[in-house]
Image (cartoon, rainbow, N blue to C red):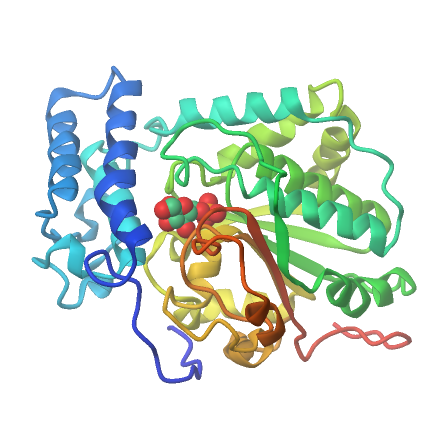
Length: 406
Ligand SMILES: O=P(O)(O)OC[C@H]1O[C@](O)(CO)[C@@H](O)[C@@H]1O
């Protein structure tokens, strides 16, 4: 069953053909390039799927791909519910968010990914490059202050880690770019004082946070360093890491990716201590991993399955990472940029929410009218990956100091 959340009347979604150059380019150029890269890097891909993937790349480029129906007969998620009347439509006319998730689902089907539980992740080589690069370029984590300042530094690490993702760069390895970047919405302190400060002074509670993960490599390494920081600070805390149920957006983390990252951090000279503590936390049940098909579906978060929504409600905080999760939160639609995040996210339910996203797509909410009036140096400020958003919405179940909520 899906939740019947209340959301305001919906504005138009982002669609390839009509409303934004960035979106059009992403469909007709970035996606084809990702598909061709996939084929080029995998000599083992058989001739039949290879031909289909190459044809799909060309069709997207030439704006003549028509959506094909996808049921679960290949062992993968059943998309009939999501298709509605979209089967047969030109890819340029369906929602961009639908299209991107659909393309990955379709290609995995052609690669027979769902038919064989040992099938290789088609993006494994890129993910390995990203992890190796992150481990090489990582400085040893400094001893962060065990307070809001340390939290801030680590959230910023996790935010700018999201700048580096392999679908945004069409599969090419890049480094985070520190020049001219700005946190356009900064609720880090509000999150710290509302959620974590009361927990530190109350060791009797055993709360859980959820992190809905995004990319492998620099982002996931930074996320895991943040997890370690929080676990060390709050002995009663546990963390569930929500991963993708199948490979998507090139570098998005699946459960095996999370395990690989933790292991490789434990084997790495600079991150050994963090990695080993995370391994112990996993063994002791304080770190858990979880995957759900919802995170590879085209649905917005206001149509989340009830079971997942109640998990968010039971957690003291849910953190969503990255651009695609942010797009899912706001349904990838053109809301007014100044629409207050807290009001909008009432549909989320009783849990608190922190969203941490480098802006790599046009839609955004929660930017103050003052900041908007000040203007941006570049007209593509929502898409160029130089601006970050850390928006917080306080839920109804926060621990107030001196009580033992949860
Ligand atoms: O990895 P992230 O932060 O979710 O970003 C993926 C983003 O890259 C893009 O694929 C670029 O088109 C966006 O569609 C998407 O939002």
